[in-house]
Image 1 (cartoon, rainbow, N blue to C red):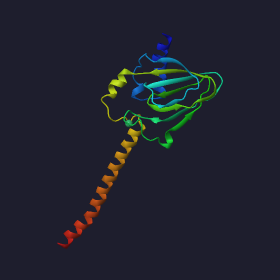
Image 2 (image 1 turned 60 degrees about the vertical axis):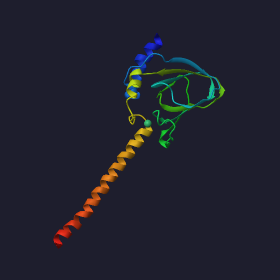
Image 3 (image 1 turned 120 degrees about the vertical axis):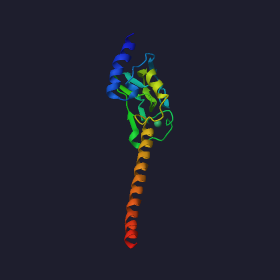
Image 4 (image 1 turned 135 degrees about the vertical axis):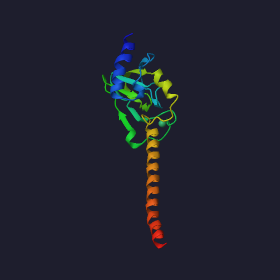
Length: 181
Ligand SMILES: [Zn+2]
């Protein structure tokens, strides 16, 4: 009951404030709390089945176990290359938490000594998932969709510039022709 309230109210507010986008602007469902001990586990690079994930380090003595993040991606672009500006590594500190989008690709390095215990909350929004079915462009949050969109815009501007330059080049020729006739 307490965790339901926590996810629905507190995480909703935190997510909307810290990670503003359509995914965090809708109410979360309540099927997402798991208490999880990591003991020398290596989590492969993945995205979560959630809109927002809260990862709280409950502590104990440990070394290693860093999280690494490599850009937010939609389903279509989940395996695309990481850009240098998307590289972010995070070392857990007992008593602190990290809140990230579920579609933020990440993994955890092995805990090299001691015990690390984390609380993970996966928050899902059925409203956002329903809306997502009808969308193709996720440039609001997918790094690769955004890059593709910018590239299309760049090409369109370049084509318009070329067309204008061509017309400017043709105008003097036309004027010369008219003057000669
Ligand atoms: Zn995408």
